[in-house]
Length: 282
Ligand SMILES: [Zn+2]
Image (cartoon, rainbow, N blue to C red):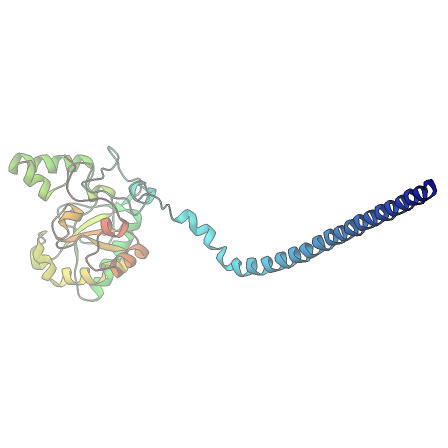
């Protein structure tokens, strides 16, 4: 019995050994497979990654034309027209003077000049140099087409406007004075870029009948070619703050005048540049 038992325990030990070896073998095999799988996996992901990077490179290339859009982004928050130096730096040819925007106190342009070869009435008028040169060119061009223009006003200083405005206030009252004249500091004429033009047909008066004269018609059609726009077109009083003045022209430079005119013969600076206008705040 003891022998049998010994044999049995021996067999048992052998069996346990075999079983252990099998288990070990299995563990090793499984580990080996796991390692292999792990090894292949990174390879697969690696290739996948390289594929992705390759794929990503091509979309990037196709995205490249989109790149110029990036500088456009800062354009979205455009400069507020109400603070844009183009309209409020007094050196700018687009400087705005209207009933909502006063020029700096006592502003006098630094480059005033007297146009030459230009007939004038009521005074000897000056304008800022570039506008003075442009008005000479415009008058000469009109003359070549048989249209004789006369300059009835140009730069008017704050002192002049003070006398003019308070003279109207004394004569007609504030309401009428505001309707026909600018308060000192608010006049387009103080920019040195505005002019009132007239002709013999209306006896050199500044009247709406000027629109029907040869001079008025010529200016309405050609002034923009010389850098001038009609500053107070018909039916735009709510926008400009002034009733129709077919005689009042404002120099903005040829490029801007062409753009404004192309947007409409009765386009205003306020509308074109999105600047507030209309009546005085008070
Ligand atoms: Zn005027």
